[in-house]
Structure formats: structure tokens, C-alpha cells
Image (cartoon, rainbow, N blue to C red; front, side, top):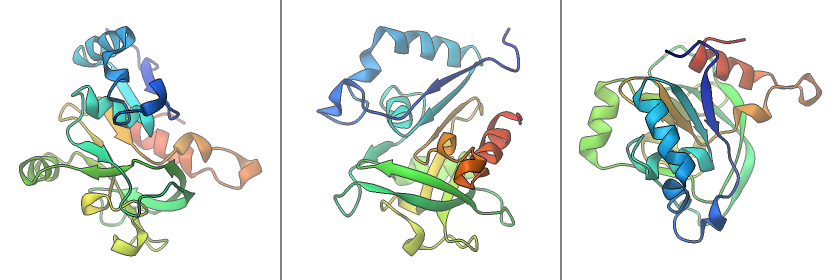
Length: 183
């Protein structure tokens, strides 16, 4: 069995140049078979940005990440909040992607809602989930999801870029604490 500190993180960046769809080639990497086996045994896996795209392409998470609705790279701080929590505090987290628009069919969206798998939604600084706060056109303002077993997590925002007092932003630490119960 795994200890509480065991986790695989698939970071942001570019995998294999992302010449087809982001993450489409990386899903065939020999390393991904090990990630899939680890996740299927209950190990925790987090995919951030390109890592999220790879998790969707590999089938560990449902849905797909499409080109941003405005067809441009978006690189800025956004606000997001826990997806199923009405009173959750908005977190300021950076995004940097050109293909981050989460999409799933209606059946999948209903399942995500029913099983409380939407872990983060884009919102404004007051916590309102509104279209104007959505940086990429993601369906239902979805910024991050998890699998039904709640051990595989994917999100487009970069919490690792919001963990420094030098940047005057520690909201990323709160994200990691929410996902993994760590400080």
C-alpha cells in the first residue's frame, strides 16, 4: 500500500511538442503505463495543465481539453473556487495555456456533477461563477476535475506557481492542502 506522501505529479509544460492534441502522444509514453497502474491501485495522481491534458488523453480522467475559445494563449492570474462548495473562498492562481478549454458531453457532465467530481470552477474575485471569469471558455467554468475514486486530479491552473511569500500569494498551498490534506 502507499503512504500518505506517495503521489505522482504530471507537471505543466509541453509533451512531445504537442503537435497533435496536447497530451495525445504523451499518453503512449512507457512511463504512462506505470502512472495508470499506480492510479488503478489507488495511488494519488495530480496533473497540472499539460499533465491534466495527458490524464484526459490516457483515460484516467473523462473529457478533453480543447483550444481556448479566443484561440490565443492565456497567461494571467485567475480566481477559482472549490467546485461543489457554495461558500468556498476564491483562490488566486496563475494559468498559462493555449488548449485549456475543458469539454465533455452532456452525459459525462451529469456524471461529474452527480459524483461531485468537479473540484474547481473559474470564478470572479468574489466567488461568483460567471462567464466573464472563465479564461478559456471551459464548459460550466470547469477548472479541475477528479475521478470517481477521488485519487486522480487534473486542473489547468498552476497552484505550484502560487506558493511563495515573494510573490505575495500562498493560495496554491491551500489547493494542495484541499487535494491531498498536506500543508
